[in-house]
Structure formats: structure tokens, C-alpha cells
Image 1 (cartoon, rainbow, N blue to C red):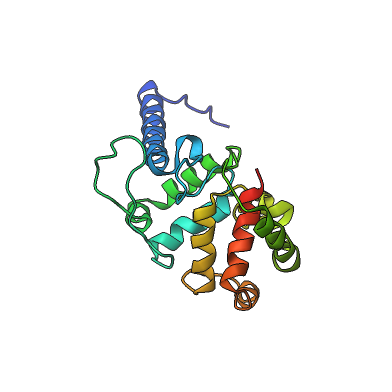
Image 2: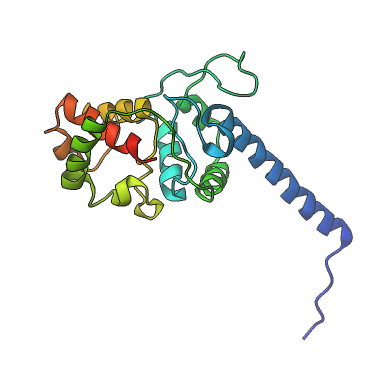
Length: 204
């Protein structure tokens, strides 16, 4: 068997520089995410969700949804870094990402721990929402919607304002969802949506 030739120093250096460049590119994308979603994906803005702890498959799907413009793309200002930059939206942000960057970013934030938002909530509404969650949601969103292993995003501990908007989007058919989920939400009143949002917000 012929002896394997050692890798040349020049080739090894080229490979290492390529790896470093790719890592730098991903770090730049992560920083752009954190400029809205907060350091380590922990948002300090009521209308911007925490993204730390969301499973990589779900996070990746979300970004692909934005690329395909199948989710609402509301304008939002930057919350950190250069806040004087013009407003942007998630469709515009996701459109610039390659498949490799989406995978890397999703994996990065999936490894970070969820930090529940510290916020006020209505205990009576939360109690009513807990019952609705147990009846209609707990089968897919276990542990109060806080288990990444469900591959069903993170609900418990999210910001109340964001939850209210997201649930309204689902009920209005503005976000893709399973047939089972759509059927259940169709039966919910606006008060039900508000109650469930308060329940998830209470999980701190």
C-alpha cells in the first residue's frame, strides 16, 4: 500500500483560514440576531421573543418560513448596537442567510438556556389559561411549553405582548400550523387567547 503523503503546510493553512473565516461570518450573523433578540437570545423587549433554547429544527424552520414570507414580517427597530439603523423585518433578515448560516445560527441558540421573562401578569387569567393549555395544548407543548425536546418552540416564559400577538396570528391563519392546532384555536375566543398568553407569561 502506498504511503499517504502528509498534508502540505500551505494546504493546512488554507483550510484553517477557511474555518476561521466561516466562524467569523457566523459570529457576525449571531450578533445581528442579538441586536434585536438580546444577548444570548434573551430579549429585553416585550414584543421580541426569546430565542435561546428553541430547538435547532424549529428555529431553522422559522427562518425558512421568513425566507418564504409565510409568517408576518412586521417592521421593528434595532434594540441593541447601532439603534439608529433603519427599521427592518425578519423576512429581510432571513433573506440574506444561506442554508449553512441558518443551520449554524439555529444550533448556536439551541445550546443556550432559556431565561424566562420577568414580567407582570394577571393571576386569574393565568389560572384560566392553564386549564385551556391542559385541555388543548399540553399534548404537544409539554412542561408548560418549555421543553425544547417537543420541537414545538418555547412558550412558557415568553414575553406576554409577543405571546398575545403570536396567538392572534395563529388564530387569524397568518402563521402556518397543524390542522389539529387550527381546529382548536378556531374555538377560542379573544379572551381565551389572552388567558393562555397570561398563563405562559406566568411561568417564570
